[in-house]
Every structure is written in C-alpha cells, then in structure tokens.
Image 1 (spheres, helix red, strand yellow):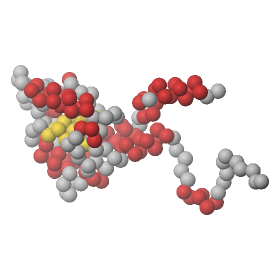
Image 2 (image 1 turned 180 degrees about the horizontal axis):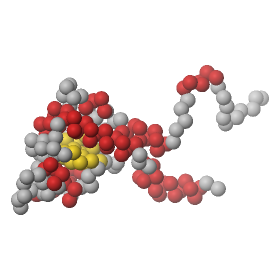
Image 3 (image 1 turned 90 degrees about the horizontal axis):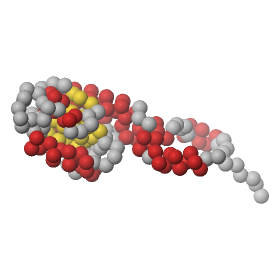
Length: 178
C-alpha cells in the first residue's frame, strides 16, 4: 500500500497555485466588490448617478451594484445635505448594514454642513457615523468620487480583517495551538 503525504509537489498544477495570507485574500475580494448604498440627499446625488453612467463607469472598480436595501450593502455614500430630520433615518439605515461597512462623505454638505449654518442642518455626517473617506467639492465631480473610492479600496486592502472582526475566534485558535 503506497504511503501518502500531506504535502507534495505536483508538476501538473505548478502554475496554478498561489500562496497568500488569509487577510490579503479576503481584503482583495472585499475591495474589488464594494456594494454602495447611495444616500442621495441633495445635488451631490446627481454627480453620484453620473459616476455610474458609461462615461465614468464605476463598474471598473467593482462598485456598480448599487442596492437600495441596506442589508445588501457595505459602503454608504452620503451625498448631500443631512438635516436633523433625516439624520435618524440615515443612522437607522447604517445600522442595518452588515459588517464590515464603510462610509464615504461626498461633498461639502455631508462633510461639514457646507454653506448651511442653521439649526436644521447637521454640521457633518461624522457627528453621527464613522466616516472613512471625505470627498470635497460642491458638488464634487464624478472623478472625485472615483478617487475617493480608490482611497477606500486602499484602506480596505490594509486592514487586518480576520483579526479585527473575529477576535474571539482568533483567541480560540491560539488556545488550541500547542
């Protein structure tokens, strides 16, 4: 009876094997398949829609699947003026999104309240949600949104995904190892 080994060299699969870290593979998948939740609240939403059109083509970055169900999204793009009346709805939608989730503040109004210094306007969505990328402009061009999306992809690729998201599982694995 022939003896089997747990590892072996097979010349038939020589060019088809890739060695990498689990975090790197998981982050590669996440950064290239972002599903945005468009929160178009004002004029920035028009630029957000233009980004999905053929001229700018957000599909090149793996983010063309814009869903309007928070349970299917992992990136919230807050585009426009956030009023206090709308703030609780935005927060509720954010809380319904599954982990991991990221937020892009698109435009001056979403980032700082813009030109509106009134009792009705939230002075930046970062007072309500953790923002990962800020995009400046009033309204920002579609190219600026694509640049912000690339910054978010860079941030995602550097995360220690497994270690940050499942620390209790990591502890169990470390305890189980001799």
